Image (cartoon, rainbow, N blue to C red; front, side, top):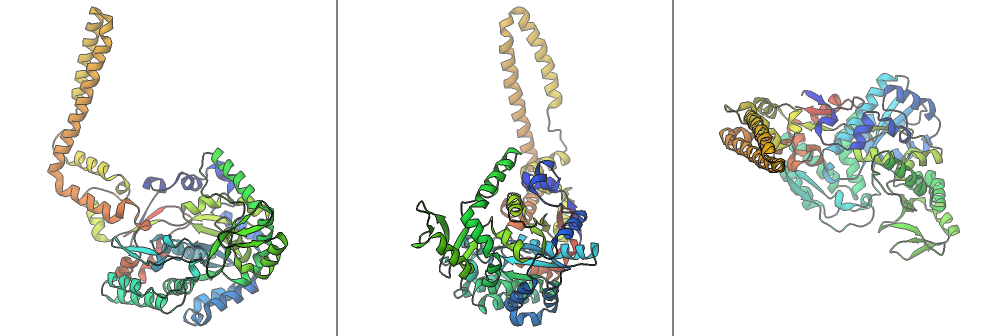
Length: 529
């Protein structure tokens, strides 16, 4: 496969904040840590050693994988390497989307694996382990219970209960069968269908199912998958849980940072609450709030704690305290020897709100690396694009604009009336002068006639263009088809379509090609064909 690269700004698809971050906008300097460059990583390495309970981390990971490590020796090697003070992680995180959800799920992981490899080349004296942090404690089931193949939406339609990682996979059979049928019949589809079946129908909960699926796709590349919904890991985080709930620090710090971002011309991505933890059980995940009587309440559950009771609960059952979106990053950096976080534009934006929290708790702020974004097509589509004299850069333009440009390039007629308007404009200048000599008050009347005529000329131009479009109907239909294929539903392919059809076409080579063509520190949109 081949690849071409274009600037993110040329896609008209990414936020102002992300583009500013990529261009090293100085107004964001105070909100970020070291820059995502080789020099930035060198500085990050200087301060990172000796801050992680590596023995506990390795023990937990080996327990979570269990017998599966025998099937993936590269993963086992990477887990063992984490015991060494010269081994560091680069991490991405994502929700447990069924069947991996949209393409950007696998793009994030491929970026992480490639970055770990590039860092090993740049710093051969160290080891770098790619990590996928499963968002097992997230409870937004509506965001993960569906995926799309060929535009068809496949949904796991059951009531949501508590953290998604703890949800039972019983009842997923019909959804799995529907996904398998949509893949069609081929060697690659059979392989993916078998992997999906083993993941969702032979594991009890969604966390274990997702680990099996992602392990099947990326295990050969050494990806380490972590489920942080784990009492042993939460025990390491317990002091931070207590300090933040009782001191309400993250709320005030993030509010100040959000105001500063707004003053710099950027929009805050997340809103911090006074308490940024949930109370988590198998049956529910509910917010903790502080009442006027100084007690702490678990909303909707009739559970209350005094301050002393809360301290005891945190110490004895830290696994019951689940960080929200603004505290999860701190938890990650407490338990991992991490150098960088790889995320999408929205994730980079909310991480920029968190640096003051890291500083308050004495934690290293990771380097923020925007994940690779990409579009994947084939030679047949590439030929169609080139045959219409389009380019991979131009296809990001609005569909109607593309059509207008095509007609103007290929018409046998002159569709603009600029020359005629210039002649008419000269005539009106003479008319206005004559009218002014007769009666100066007639000037506005002359201008009004001129304005009406200019509008009529503009409307005539549009009619000429519309009429000539009929002469290029086949080509314009092709433009519509290209846009719908590459931008299903009018959005980037990666934000809509599942990787299933691409895996059916390319098999394991799909993952290999993504890792090969992604250049995490170049910050270009990748088109693979």
